[in-house]
Image 1 (cartoon, helix red, strand yellow):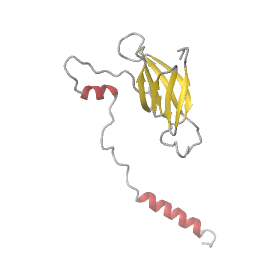
Image 2 (cartoon, one colour; image 1 turned 120 degrees about the vertical axis):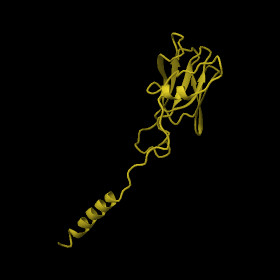
Image 3 (cartoon, rainbow, N blue to C red; image 1 turned 135 degrees about the horizontal axis):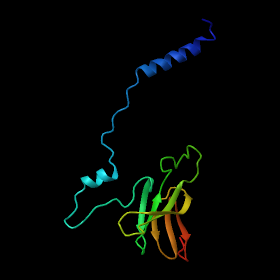
Image 4 (tube, rainbow, N blue to C red; image 1 turned 135 degrees about the vertical axis):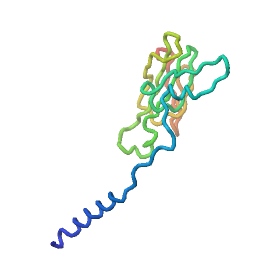
Length: 150
């Protein structure tokens, strides 16, 4: 074997050896539950009912929420919380504020509206003073909505 091919052959051997000794992926320490499975495991006081108002894919990576006077849920979806410091994939701000509404009064969300997108790392939300306050560390953002047209 020529001296030129030796480093390449060694690299291939090392790669094959590392794959041969790799451990299989470990099982999760707990079982991920569907919304219905999670509700079935909950205990609530007599006279109370637990139901899933919203679940994936209607809400993705929820981080914080609040309610408005119309009973709607305003939700921070923090879609790039894992990569916010490095922006590893150069995606830019991926967070958003969505409004979830139960239009027919059955206790389940049936309308979803994106209020604002392209927010970097939304971690908190409050409504008031004619708009929406969003914690986006190290910033506190104010998004006006004086005419309440969302």
